[in-house]
Length: 123
Length: 111
Length: 100
Image (cartoon, rainbow over all chains, first blue to last red; front, side):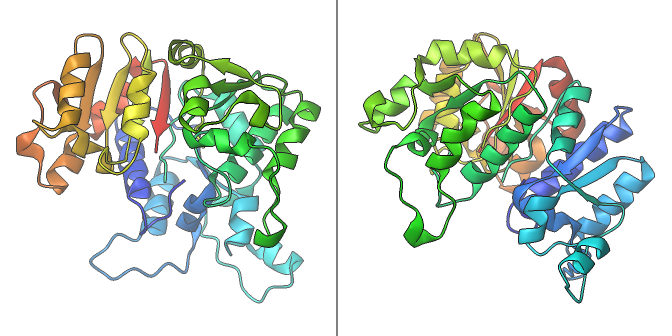
């Protein structure tokens, strides 16, 4: 839920996910909500000696085939759009990193119902 | 709900998540603790700050099937609030009752 | 059994004290990010932790304590864990509650 580069929560969530996946646990879904949606911004350009968090998420979740969903309502108002939404709202650009997908809060509720544990990495 | 309304968007986005849970028919409990109890203060007027009125969003909860609104009694007392100051009827809980409530949950979202 | 995760310093936020006010028997508490400052030995918060340590287990994310230069002054009633042990803690407890 926290914003990357403003809070540590994204880094903590990433290290946790990495440890969970590498020790054989399954992650049903990672849901990016609130300021956490900035993790999906493909235009993030940190200096070379800092982690590129959107890229790290992209690599980890692709490697382990984890579903990564960005809350569409949180994302649109913060300027995170995929091609479809950019066309719908007549914007010149879109910036959602693959494999992130924009979807609704129903995905969070569905994930809660299908998981043994739900962990929030708070802002 | 543990955060005050308006200064940060947590209360608003928390309510959105709560309503989504209710729409998907999840069996849920709604508890206000700490500054979260300020969300329940009656007479909120947000016209001048151009934000959605949370008091009105909360009033709609019963339409979503959320009928029991649980509140930390101590949080009210610390803030000089009584149940008459709140926009909705609530059930007040002690610290022990809150601890028990947490034990019974499968998932806890704090906003 | 609830795993409570706290990521805010007790010196500037109420998350720590409020979480402790509603702890159930056997509940566990994991201090991460700025939450680790609650585990510094000899502070008032360390005393609170020690008083509860009979009923509740307290943990600290070692990487966060090291990053903040306080790994060598952690209260003896607080156990250091790495990310893999953090994962294990979430499986041992029935539900996880993040305070912030």
